[in-house]
Image 1 (tube, protein in one colour):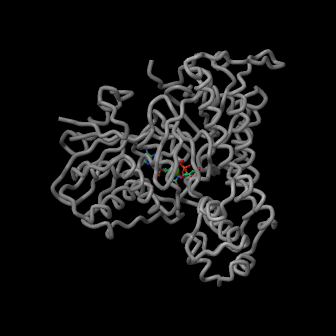
Image 2: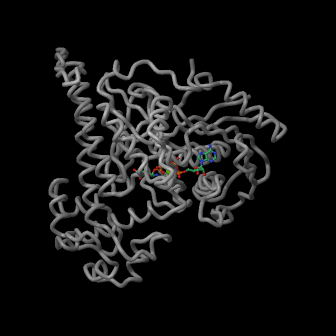
Image 3: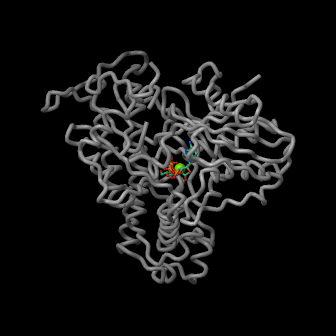
Length: 490
Ligand code: ADP
Ligand code: NG1
Ligand code: MG
């Protein structure tokens, strides 16, 4: 008998595509010679707003996707892990899982992680949590349909599904917030020092709403989106495996240094501990707007050398490396502290505004004290009806994108091009996820290719669904029209 372990308690009959389960089951049987005992399913996510601020302690606003990582699992009596992927481009793998110390997460010669490293992260983190007390080994067969390395968090879905399978196999129950935090910690074994947004929404996402995720303690508050807002996810055709470069950790390091300098220059006493930009705000007892002013005052330079930072903080280079850097950022000699800190504080302001607009729009729709209020619409020059709430949300997304492009420098030429094309048709859009992308400028897709990808790869997600890298708010549902993307359920 099979059972489903789902990060959102969906019964097996409600799985989006049962053909997929049957195929996965068949491949599992062919590989391991027996039927799977249970299935694990963890979704990808799209972040609506609040990019690169989770690791600074600020709230974010993602929603879970229908696209997921699905794992069929079997139990064995030896402490081993056997791994198969339905996609043959991913090699089979097996390893001993007696102790988390034995699980080594090593990348290939180019520094790119092997796919199974993400599974190993989940298993290693789970074993550590269980003090290596496991009663069963695992046979896992993985089937993922979150576009990989595209900003929709395929990595965290894979890490989290593996960790969930290990815990379920040992019959260890954890609350959703506990397992989300455990998976955030586990994924750091891949080398990126992430903030926890992806694992949080993977476990705490709910149907028909986004989640306002806050930290310490981890909490998710549902946010209902305006009924006529349509969110679309499109792929810019640029991909990047985030753990293969130090782009992500460089930003984490820069934010830590900026936080420490702000607090030091403002005369607050700190010990040597790392503090986030959020903790800096808390320590200085300022609002976000004041923090923006303090950044201009205390971090005026465009570029800080390591020597500059050491002088301001009165520490040695060795201390700076040990306290604030990740393994792959210790060699860096220059940092952009003003730009990164400005993005973080201004993006945190945008998240609050976005959430406020959503909450107020629902209150207006339901009416305060039961009295239904009439919504006001303005008509655009181009004749389209313009809902003011959608317009404000869209503008916040546009500002977010500009900031990610110019201050955080994590966009990509393809993505900016797609954003420009959408602007022409009066659609607001932004990058979602960590960003970047590996294609070189010369391989930039043509307008036709991008337009094709735009019109063929999206799903409407305002109420329940979604797909990839640029998120767009359209002004109203009629303008987008009915759409059945390829492979969608009929
Ligand atoms: P993302 O934005 O999707 O989280 P990451 O760079 O963090 O991108 O992680 C992408 C990596 O996750 C891929 O390069 C691959 O190693 C792994 N991965 C994602 N989906 C799958 C899958 N279905 N099967 C195997 N590995 C996967
Ligand atoms: P992606 O693009 O899924 O690798 C990363 C981080 C998030 C968050 C976003 C940027 C991990 C696992 N994920 O997402 O925590 O910082 O970038 O907002 O590190
Ligand atoms: Mg990822």
